[in-house]
Length: 145
Image 1 (cartoon, rainbow, N blue to C red):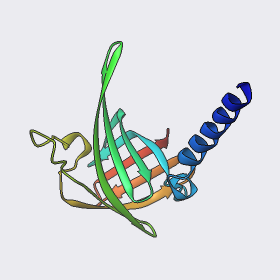
Image 2: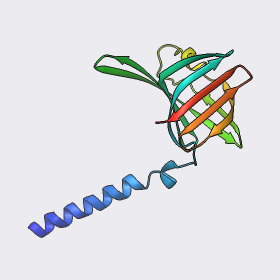
Image 3: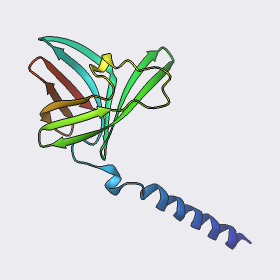
Image 4: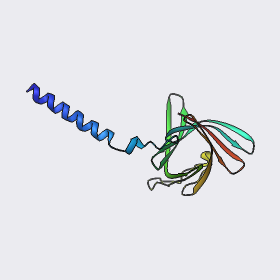
């Protein structure tokens, strides 16, 4: 009886291990852009605004924007999803409006709108820092989170 239970546990463990590791190719790794990036500075017309609650997440061809509302002990997070394409030093993405939203979300804090394609230029991209520009007046500085 103990052998059957042990074999069953091993098989369940193997099955779960295969399921968890087979979801994406290379765990979705797409190079230095992969992962979670925290926006730390937003520059507009030479004026810097510090940030610490905006995150851009990249995996495969999916981008997720997160806005964290800090509220003492509890934080709440708004998530927005879209798709992106990187072509050399150009990053294009579009945030899709989910059908389950009862109202149109306000993405002005990201300087974005829903269902509109945006083009950013990658000024710097290392394993720990990313700088994106949009036009001559806007600059976004991120750190790897």
